[in-house]
Image (cartoon, rainbow, N blue to C red; front, side, top):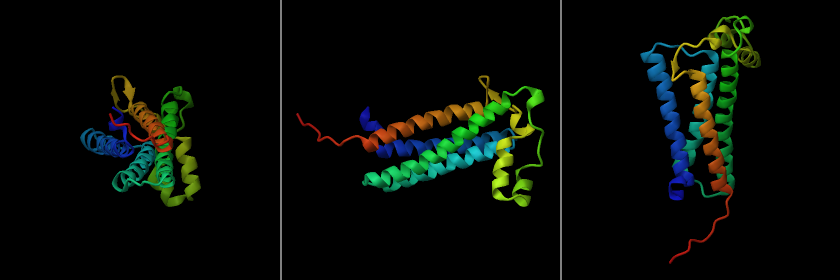
Length: 175
């Protein structure tokens, strides 16, 4: 069992989960169902792609240095931590009473074209009415709730990867 949880195999798992998550978002939700992502959905995707990029580098190069592994792990953790935080905010917005939901804004493209970068982040995290809509559910869970579950699992995988990086190497015993 522990042989399956090697540093490299865990990184490959993260890459596979990134591909599955992005494929689900792009091909099923967007192309098949015709759902356009709200600003918070886009930010979640960015974090997932960041995590997957660092995991891909780790899987391909499989660095032996503990310092390099920690650096790549940190980049990956920041990506999935970002996605998780945005998903928490998104779920919170969806559970607000209707009278407390922020009004719909002009949209992310408009903000990017007209506002400084920090103001764009502020506007996105303030949320908008479109982020509070529940357009599709599966087994009673909205898309951000499903994303939050996935991201939480991926955070747990990061804990396992950290354990793999930091655990002392013991010589194998032969019988």
